[in-house]
Every structure is written in C-alpha cells, then in structure tokens.
Image (tube, rainbow, N blue to C red):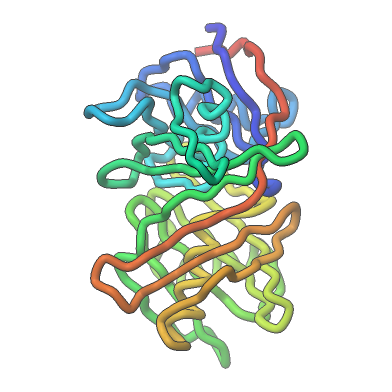
Length: 270
C-alpha cells in the first residue's frame, strides 16, 4: 500500500506520522517497516486518525498505544502549518487541539515558528505511580504512565545489558512500552532507550519526552515537588520540562524545537 507521511525532528527524536488512514491491526507491521533504516529510519511511528469527540481537529495514535509527547509536538507543528486548524494568540503563539493515544481528554499543543522551525510545548500525563527499587548500591526510580513505564537510573553506563537488568528487576520485560533513562545527574544529561512490545523494537532515542517527564518527576519527588524549565540534554537534542506534583490536578509539560524533515509517500508491504 502507498502511504502519505511526514517525517519530523522533535529535539532529535525522529518521528514519522502516517497521514493515510491505516487500520489499527496494521500499526505494528507498518511501523516495523517504516522504522527500518533502509526505509524512513524513524525512531517511532504515529498514525493520524479522525478525532473520537468534538473539539479536536485530529487524533494521534502511536504504534504501541502509548502517549508520546514528541509525537504530539510533531503532529501539532504539522497541523499549525494549516492556519484554519489552529488558533493564533495575541502573543504570536499558535494553539491546536488534538487527541492522543494514552491520554484521557484533549491535548492543547502550543507553538510558534522561529527561523524555519517550530518551538512547541505539549502537556503530558502525570505519573500514575512513582516507586524506588534497589539496584546494587544504586536505586531505580520507576515511573508509570498510561501505556508506558520508565525507569530512571543515575550514573550507570548506558548499555543494553543494563537495560535488560533493569527491566528484569522492575518486572517490566513484557509491559507494552518500557524505557530506561540513563541520567547523569551532575550534567543533567539523559540517554534514553525504549522498547515497544507491539513492534518488538528497542531503540536508543535522540530524545524522549515521556522519559524526560519521568526524570523531572523523580527530581521533583526528591525536592519540593516541582521543577521549572528543567533543561535535559539528550543525545540529539534538548527538552525543557515543567513538573508540579504538589497539586491534585498537577502539571507536566515538555517544550523544545520541532522541524519538518520530509513530506511524501512510501510503499509498505501489508
């Protein structure tokens, strides 16, 4: 089948969004092919769909059913290119309302265009649970979100061996999506690796939005319950995180640059 797609670069986390409607039972196979380096070389794949309810202009379904902040930022930036889909604020920012897998309600994505790329912010789900698990002399900060779980490990060497060790200790080998965020606490640098069960993929990502919220949540939990404009440097980009765990409804948001890499059509065998 021939599929229309966009290839986006949200802070280095190369994301392909398939614009042609695709049946959900094909998400895994389409994503596997699109992620192949001989094809589009994406780190993750989302699928544009019609919204389920009123008020949103479109819906983003990720390949594993998880919520993806970089996916929402990418989709939002693309939709902002169509002036009739967004709302322009007096500040010059554009707003667009979408739905997303792994998120109850609507996602208000906000951005502005700067020197050929967008600066885009997206709200994020708050953790449903945070716990700490011993790992030798260290400890794992395990942060659960709808559809994805992240383990934050501090000052450990980023390797596949450590990833699987952490997955086993956390009993997360078979969850729908699981990431390990290797955090250098002194430098505030993060190396993310994420496994998605549906596609059997294990990817060292250029950046990870939900993983960044996990890191911010751990730091907030160890502090006063908040982080503001936390700058997390990652292998191919930087994300800025705001967290407030002190209120019942709370706050989580990620921000950073998004650029369009390609827009075209691709042949997929399904």
